[in-house]
Image 1 (cartoon, rainbow, N blue to C red):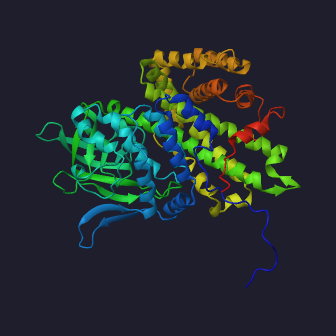
Image 2: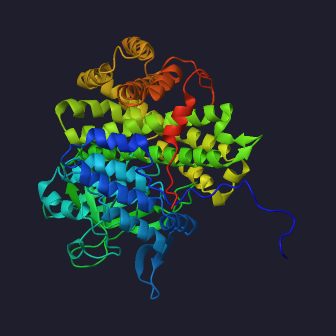
Length: 547
């Protein structure tokens, strides 16, 4: 029946056909700031190309298709042979292939590689966050494998390759590979030292057979995995290939795929090892120390991935408010909505600036920057990932009922938002890690204080917050119970110092007034009304190509 009851008006056009990188001022400025002039033009061109693809209708459709068609586990072939394969929708492969081709697993061996990769990861995962897991695992496996130069010589060129080849074959027959990771078990979860998977040494040096399980195994379709198991000398790191050099399948029984809240396009699994061949990585008994660099790199991706979710949610909210009229004018012009949007934009920019500063520290790779990362990464991971869910939920509300329906894409962002606060250690794990760094590595605190000290004197509220933090750190009574409070203050002071140094005055002023000066309510949209909120919102508004 023809619709004759009304004409559709005042509906917002989709946010499509725009450069996700170029339309993000905070991100593009960070890239300009952290890359040397010699590589900046090339990097900007790469990121612009990636940003235009991420904002295209085609790639947005791939993201929706990958999310709507979750992976399927195929344990056996038609003849009854065990194959343990995971089948993905073609859109998943297109997203992952494009990401690998764009260098999102290649950071460790090129100048400015971490900044370039982090910016690309922030841009590309806005299309669909689920395929970020194998990208992150593959990228992060490199430092762990470098503890064994012989293994690194074989695997690193494949891990950092810009060629994506799906399907299980011997690594020697592929031009590029993906890696996953298996650390946790049913009985222990994050307490990996309680792992029960056994590793029995074989006659050949460095070779073992594993027997046991992994409760969460990331990206089970990958070519190889770093796992932890109990060897005779204690908890040890191992490399488990899916396919052995003779083309036979390694024993890697996928029991089931997890039915998750979000992250639907990605496969997370439970696996069993039963005489599974593995190669030791690092020394026996030093498994945590061997794999910790991989964990640190994936924690940085948690920060960047959450910044990506925030940016996409805030972009959608501002775009909607710039086109939707209510009560006699555009929503974006209403003082109360402007306050909400500005508050969300502050959180998004602070997350982006912090994530990119951490990436730049990886590129610098000095003793000072390594000490800084030891404290800054878990603090950032704790705070930014926790803020993500609140930001996305508020941004969804800006769209009203339209934001609550699946077609808007906002429910997918909201389901994804809690993931990064859990992945690679939940909030308490990060807080305790910060305490360990404070207690055992005084150089880490020194490096952090030197970093925030670069902005000292520029804003009295920041100066006061630094003083309060030092007072908090000087009192170690009941420190574990206060760990979250301490880590929150570290993260906020660090974000404030970076914004004071690098953001426009109106952004830094609003952040310091609210987050550090405590002129703020308990919900978004409670910024002081005297601030230049219109400029904050205008800065965060995505630019859509009118063509």
